[in-house]
Length: 356
Image (cartoon, rainbow, N blue to C red; front, side, top):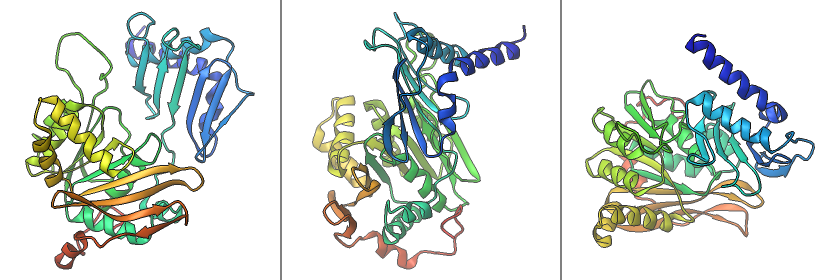
């Protein structure tokens, strides 16, 4: 049997074990499919999580075989003793995280983050109420002025969606380089190089350790005009990202945090802990190189919203826009110094789409 035939056969087995939930991937508005155990399946659809009790697998073994077969098709080891967690990306860019029993005591569980079928634009975000047109215009100026940006928020809050939407404002002449643990970014750029660390969960072995920090350092040698880092999760990646900022590169990234100040504190703590560095020194470096922190949340009643845009001025965070939960609308909190830089901007410079 040829390698290609074996590969196709492996994916045929994946498709077979996907059977009970295959139709869920095609439902409109579904962004997550969550198999908590063989008889407990949930989906997130149009921002709301709900059970689908009519969807069940035959037994625990069926879910375990699904996770095993995905790992086999991707060439990633999966077994209860040494590799009980599978964290990977399918060929259609759907994210998958499977955990085998007994690490998952209730039974093998697997979650699929469905890759969007439709590319959400900045205009779409305004129409959905995620942010206002005035907020978007500020962010557009920040993009064109090469502001360094950190987008913070919780899981599923819309960080990557916003990052993708803002990339449309990058002038076409720029060389854009991206680095991710698992590919989620959809950057619309003519000159674009994308790197991915597909083995970040794999331990041991011989060769280069291809993690996010390694990719960021590699991109610095690729002559980028602008760098976009998928998500900072660990100290090594945070340190590499800060190094990129300190060497004059324009860079964006996302990070999990509860609010903009926490986002600053988290990246500062990660970097300080990486090299046993003085916190105050790292704090000064971070705050002198970051220009904007955009915080996203999945609000209880209004859905995904940009709840804060904060500018870092002279090392201090100044909130420019905030979401009022009481009034259910965005409120302007302060004036930005970034808009002053737009006075001498060449607004005729072409962008990738929405910035025309």
